[in-house]
Image 1 (cartoon, one colour):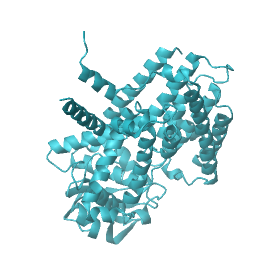
Image 2 (cartoon, one colour):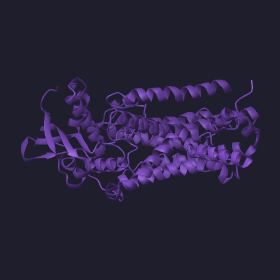
Image 3 (cartoon, chains in turn blue, red):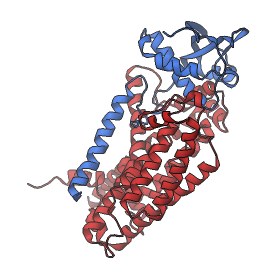
Image 4 (spheres, helix red, strand yellow):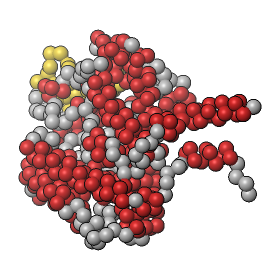
Length: 158
Length: 329
């Protein structure tokens, strides 16, 4: 390859990759295999924040006396070979899309989440949690918990 | 047309990278770059060996296997077999790269080893693997190196070509950081426009840490301190954004290569002690590619290093110009 052609190729690669990265950062997943925009920690959580989480109601066919919230449920009921932050981002995507009424987008994430249960059937809720960020870290106390959808792994899908 | 001296000065401040030809004329930068390339493959050989010894701990369970397009062939086997095959392929490819790094075919094989490993890691669970991206870029760009053993004496053109590819390899590492820094600044602008909390606010790091530790139920060494004393976190967070955002610019400021790479390695260590996040895959690349950068001129003064700093360097230049003009008066 001639020197100048290589120069143009290298420069074009970085420019195209930058715009491709910027484009995929706007999608629901925020990235695409082989296109990683590295947009990490781009949004500072507000003092009073909202987050989405999973609440397990029934596990392995048995109703739980005390429904358990993710991430407490992570060590008990989920495949731990997948790191907890990965679950968080998937649950967040599911929650945000349900909240915004775009449930058509979430099938793949529900599927991925349900594949990770160690035992089935499981009945769980997607919960929208409102909290004071610092207080939530200190005490785990929330301001409001609102169930926005209930799923059963036995159901045929969305 | 007479060019404006201020514009000239500003252009020199933005971009004063000597031509690659001037580096190629000397033996030292080329020899250094060649050695670093060799060590990159040696590191891969070491990494592939340690990964093999770690067994399948880096990979998920077969229930969570969801292949990306480049590992679809794994569907013909079991995920367990695929892990074994790809780990051995990665090992073999890294050793081939280490032994025959001067040969393009060997470098293509080494790239394929990293490519398949990254694909396999991205095929478990929900998210694509991020840790191996920098190595994917680096091994990809290294393919373009000219075969260094093809000639006993390397022509000026050959050395120039080699150094251009080496510069692209360095760029690929800094590029990822600049993207990350850009994302944070872009996010901050959006949040400022929206009237909310933003990355430049003193509480930004404290809120990030509290949110991260709470949502992952994890603990860290200095996280609680930063949450209780947000002002200590402010320079750390803004400093990290500064380091990340300007990384690509620093590529053309060889006097700062070592300092910047060290700063970025320390930012990873900081992220670990504050947030408990272990992301160190870029650290070996930063150390190998920039600590003894072929483009760094030995004996560069501290004055030059300070003047090359983004933002602060220009302020310093302005201050020096102001003092000089005052003295003249």
